Image 1 (cartoon, rainbow, N blue to C red):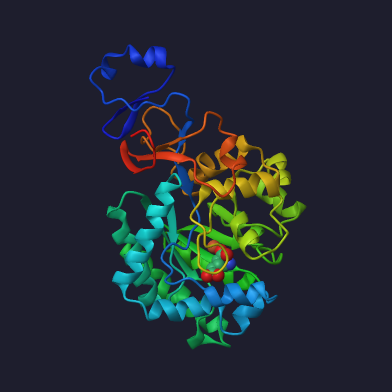
Image 2 (image 1 turned 45 degrees about the vertical axis):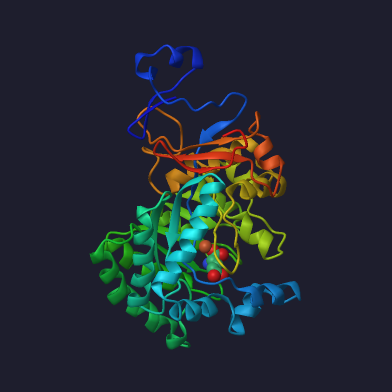
Length: 383
Ligand code: NIG
Ligand code: FE
């Protein structure tokens, strides 16, 4: 590649690139014998989320389920309370630490959801932390997750909460232009199909593009809601069946799979990746980084889970974690692959064969991460 002003100016075999005038005098990054590939696009994370949920973790190890723990005061509501007590500056420090772990694992673009605020003000606080992160090395794309769970102050009156969010919070967040996407958690224990539809319609009317947490624990029709409303992605999909696969295949909605949450919750039912791919759906992979169900920042680990547990091939997993992730964010014209005119977002790995990325699970083979032509993480012995 020849990189100029952060973008890919030329790409091709070394014999051609070496002889280009534009390559003369360039600073050379030696990559012989190493895989160079597009930076990971982590298109689903709850990046700004406060402290880890270690008591939940131990309770689950003891046999309690994610839903039981949530019903007993843990879960998302616990994080909502913890976030309320954490200063914005501290939330930012935590998120920056996570972003630097992500960069070291090869991620160059991260979607970041709100979702741990009681009300519009609290959500805007989280979104302003996400906005502050935009000056960092990794590109952050904020999403307004205005309907995650019913906050404690609306307990027992979820419809009232959805009304308030739809009529007051959504237009307010939209008017500030702090998030491009709106997301909803549509499942048993969160929001019903009708509530999710009401929220998404208001969000769409306010100019948001849509995403849906769909079919994570049950099948209540969230996938069809997402495809009918033209959502950019339907995420999770562990409980998607044939009808859902067909709906996704026939739509432009990306099927974003999050095997980290299945793994961390100690569950065994992964999303039907093979059937989705063979059925013609576009499959993306993301970490779902969050303190409850998937506290990992490692896209290479997600690739290992995708290949070993969901039987995606290493090549399919890499496409899902780069180009298809970019599609899930509507950013495929600028990032997600190494092509002339796109941002020079790439990583170099210590290995000569890309199949080694998922194969060596749990480690980190990333030698160097580059964002817009600038090195943002490096761990090479030789330099
Ligand atoms: O994507 N399922 C809903 N939301 C998150 C979990 C968030 C949390 O537990 O804090 C998810 O898995
Ligand atoms: Fe999520």
